[in-house]
Every structure is written in C-alpha cells, then in structure tokens.
Length: 248
Image 1 (cartoon, rainbow, N blue to C red):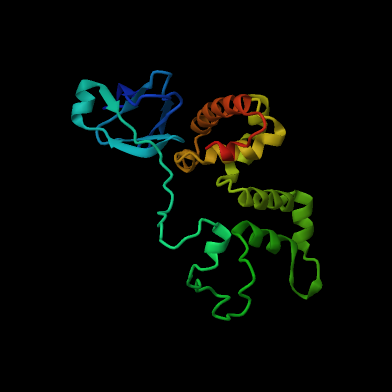
Image 2: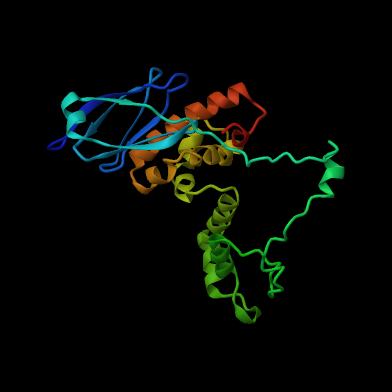
C-alpha cells in the first residue's frame, strides 16, 4: 500500500563480493527490505526520506531521497567495507627480539582510576540497570522479606529480571526481541534453543538492530530476525563448532 507522494524505487548495491541480505531501512516511515544475491532491492520512499543501509561487513550508510532519485526511480549504492583498525605499533632500536625480556624495559604510565586515587569502594564493580532492578525486586532493608518480593516470585517478574541480567551480561541490547520472539525463533526460524543467546548477540551486532526494535513493529522485527536467522544458520553450517561472536 502506497501513501500520497510515495513511489517504489529500484536500487542496487554495486560493491563486488557478497551483497545479499544487506538491510535497507526507510527510517522515516519504518519501511524495510533486504537485498538479493545481486544486491538489488525495491522499497517505497518519498522525497526527503532517509534510507539506512546496514550489514556486518559494511559500515552504516544513510542516503536522503532526493527529487532526482524519485524521478529516476533508481538508486545505486556503494558501501564502505568495515575495517577493524589495530593500534599503531612503533618499532624502537635496542630490542633483543625476546618479548618477555624487552617488555621489562618498557616504561609505562599508571592509569588514573578510582583505585589509584584511593577512593572508597573503588574495587566494587557498578551493577547494571537490570541488576539494580533485580536487587530491588528481591531485597529490602532490615532483613525482612518484602511483600513485593513474594508477589514478584509468584508473578514471575523476578525470573524475567534474572533473564534480563543474563541478557545484559551477554551484551544482548534488546530484551524485547527475546521475550517477544523466542518461541518464533525456535519454531519458525529453527534456531537451536542452546544457540538463542548466540543468535541474538549475532543479530544485535548489526548497526540497524536497535533502530529496527525501536519501530515496535512486529512485522519489521520479524522480517529482520528472519533474514538474520538465515545468515546465522549458514554460518553455523560452515563452522558448526564456532561461535558467531568470533565470525562477525
């Protein structure tokens, strides 16, 4: 269904190499599609809409739809490859080649931290937001079990918070996806139950992940997760013993 002023344009990612399953997201009107094996796609747009292109192997790119693009109904896109740069290494003279021996002669500066400054409780790791919520749901002052704790236990809220802590520790940004789509991921997308967290971690590595979830559109989220599940399972078949975290 097209709204006033909208047109369906054809586009193509012109990079060489792998260009299937690149996510194309109209963040102005929450429209979403993916590229085929040739990098081609179609999506409905209006003038001044913003398209976001995202894939693990490419840097995020945004394109604002101009009148020229609308008139031509065609868009060619070149994406910059994602490069992980290493810190610069400086070679100095008078080195023996023995890393252990040479490292003893390297002068370093102490990093200023709460611990080096002697601040109280500097050794304590700050709890995450989910951990704070979990603590509130299960503790109270004076050693008395609060009524809210009992209610939480009965309602399952405490269990959900524990799951949220687990997700946070695994860097899974959006608990919404897990709670709303875990059964779908198992039944429809055939993600093994013991791989759900790994799969969500893999999906969340996509720069579009958070924007997709923020749309709160079950259809858009479903399509995104479906596309991700296919590439994830393909990676699993190629490297059955490897974690996707080491493949991204």
